[in-house]
Length: 348
Image (tube, rainbow, N blue to C red):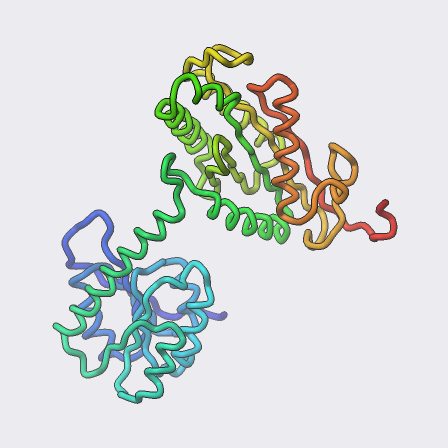
């Protein structure tokens, strides 16, 4: 990309709050920078970027609440920048306001079609700009709350199945590119139905919350993800984690759940609530894991057992979970999944 353009942060004069809004102003127009910077400075933190070509990289690092983008810039067409920002999944929901000195209806329609949410026309009116920014901040805040709600499990407060599926695909791709291990834990409450039948759903819900809390504490690195997989089953994605590390964490989870000493009179495993855990670790040693044959320590040929990627890793963890249950429960079992390139005719 070349040398990074000048990036300037304006010290905010907004009241100190727990989470002040962040604004990214992309413009090489001194007028826009001075006037809009002064207005935005009253509302939160402002970062100014004078090279539109670096907008995608800076926005990815900053994660602003609102992006203000000059429509006409020497470095890059503002429309092209808007398209690039909206194409990035992690940035697509950030409101983009175009700053323009023109009132061209065709250009405004095109900008709206590309995903822009509003316009700021020059010469700038302080009350109008401030009112519009505040409206878009409020709307984004509400939208963020709704997105958070649909991504969390309502009972346990950790990620839900939808988030798990998205993250599983993302981390599989990352592991494939970087050739780093990827581990997955499937966690199941032992004999949970008899527990619910005896103690009732309220205490059953408390058990689920306890396990979710243990998993969140154990898998606490920024890239780790704990999710409710379904019913009494949970899943933990552990990027860049080898088999020994994953099994060690799984064993620790088993001990911590048991240490809570929650009575379970109908369990033949123990007189307390316990969990069983299946651990699968992907070891990628080829150029691309998609569409390739795989082999597994359990059966020698993973392709015969599992259908698709990255579902194969989930299936491997589930098979390891079944081994843990058949081995007496209250334990963790692991399996290493190796993805290798094999000519199809050589695979039976």
